[in-house]
Length: 120
Image (cartoon, rainbow, N blue to C red; front, side, top):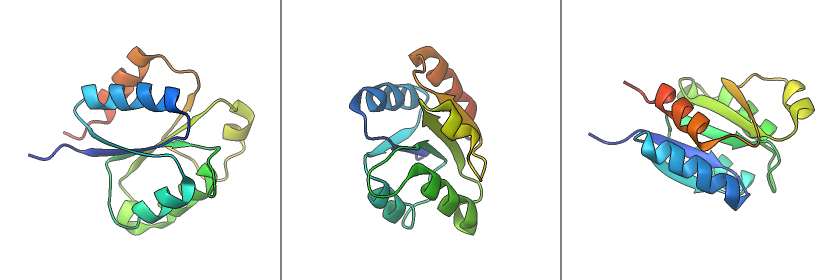
């Protein structure tokens, strides 16, 4: 049986390392994308179980990606976790993610969340 896919859209390597490890330990296949435009194109090709989305990305913002995901019927069941250090920016989102993670997040907390989102 194939592992569920999590796409981590994050451009800071320190955050990528923690997110990738936590989701991998929870049983996910991980794919890391550090550019909003690349993530936008990839989401036209695959339907992941979870997207972890930084709001401040090069080329295409995380908010724009969230909007795209929420409007795409193919992605209706995808869980979106927004990851940001900017609480005010998260509070101003026009479309709601499934969860907002305020950076920094502990590895233990992230692994626990990843296990909650593992499709059973």
